[in-house]
Image (cartoon, rainbow, N blue to C red):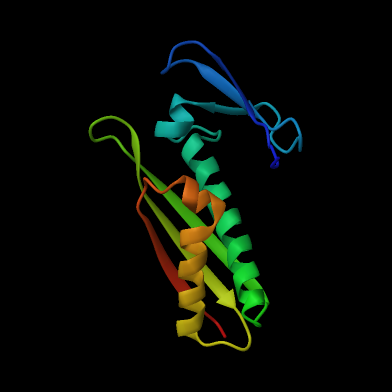
Length: 144
């Protein structure tokens, strides 16, 4: 049996004027965190599904990259990843693209090897595998 991580969503009202709350009961890090139409499609304060997917992907990819670098004999000093999830409205809302941008400080390898290992992490971290239907691009910055 694997590991299960729960999250809950509560919603009241119609799509445009309704409001929701997201929670992560096991960790408690999200507790009645607001989300709604305007935090998703506008600038209202609150989170949205795309932002949470971006956070999950950035975290998963970075952990996978750290592991692969360590297995290659070059544990990273630091890795900083930004994930951007695009929501297209053409033909109805759909995730249309994810951009991963990673900067690594990794002694013992060169920029080409860093990019090669980062591509492997992009393809094989669990979140990337779950999101196979969405094109993912990767930009690397190597600081040695």
